[in-house]
Length: 552
View 1 (tube, rainbow, N blue to C red):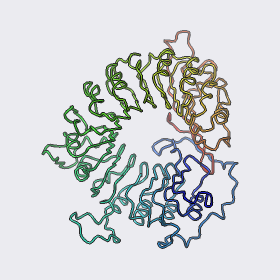
View 2 (cartoon, rainbow, N blue to C red; view 1 turned 180 degrees about the vertical axis):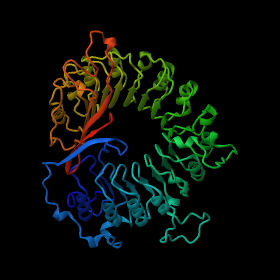
View 3 (spheres, rainbow, N blue to C red; view 1 turned 30 degrees about the vertical axis):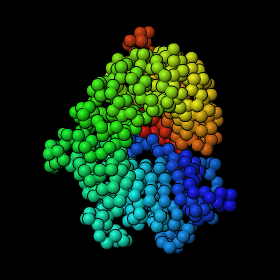
View 4 (cartoon, rainbow, N blue to C red; view 1 turned 90 degrees about the vertical axis):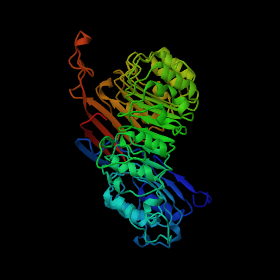
């Protein structure tokens, strides 16, 4: 690369498991002109909240490299004047859960240039390690810290005075702290509610989904950051409770939180959850006129008149995710017909009486369609109409029990460029095997659960061989035609990240499916809950097999 691409500025090696941290060190030494590096991989499916029954690891047999020449001399670290490390401004390490605090300390050598870092799901990092990185890299303005141990120490570092700040005077008393210049802050899944100390006023992107941040912490942040264009708060239950006095600009309590947001910000990306009710059309116009991506989740209920008016309220809408909302044919049909830029439509656990009429309209821009437990009536004829009306690259269907083995051919021939296919509780789609699914050569992620007992023992090896881009595969032992699946230590493809296999609480015998004891009357069969998941996860150095007491 050094001699062939002398003008190269951006290097992307995403999903390349065999590219290790030592390779990053070598890259920085050999190609110092690069200013953006992306080494992200799929995040681990095993979170700390899950109960682990057992776990074992074995070294990958395809890893046999001499890394001695890749290690830098320790004297290079912390050399602020070294021009070799003066160009890297953006570094993405998302999903690299083998990155440690020591690695972060080594990354600190980029302190003269690093402005953007993504360490999402780097689960080995501690609050002290992240704090040390922030203390050294004071030029940082964008940080993706989701699902890390970011907490009080890190927020204190963000809000401490910067001794290197050259500005002698500023009308804002907080101008000399790092947080003042922060533009992006992603804290999704971080357990600490430390946002209460945040004093920044330049934020454009804030994600506090699935955190314990309270309204008393969030309200002042909203008021200070009028340029906020993205706000994600889904899953923040603490927003429901007042912890202290939270005064709003209108003099009301935080119950008018949405009104306060819309009077302060013009959002382009919003995730609404708890504390966003009640919602009126007046709350959304005109401040939602620039929204391109919207997610409405548990804790917020949009009335039908607002859902129907979304194409008018948000004329540039590109992505819409609805969870636990009440929907109708009128709403969905209007979205597909009137939102001409709509590329993503996800309906999860929504109530209402949808029929096939909802999707009998052209939606040429639609690329991602997820229908989770909302369309039990879908037949092969409905699938055929969908293939004619939209060109999908991602399809998720669950609860569509009228589908059969012929559905595979409709899906694979209608959408040959699918990158993601997830089918759950979908009749007997895999009763005769998965040959047609393996014809979709662009597939990167496949999930098949309760889709018919016809999946052969060699499915994992076959999928890796036939699908060169496959990274994630999820199966159900109930669908195994021979009682189980063979699991290879060394995947033929270099992209494979994880395989998940759910299994019933009771053993699966010939006379039992995913139900209890076989019975002549189907009405007497009782579903058996899936209590365990076997997870095979490949990293750059090893294969880890974990049994989790959850259905993942």
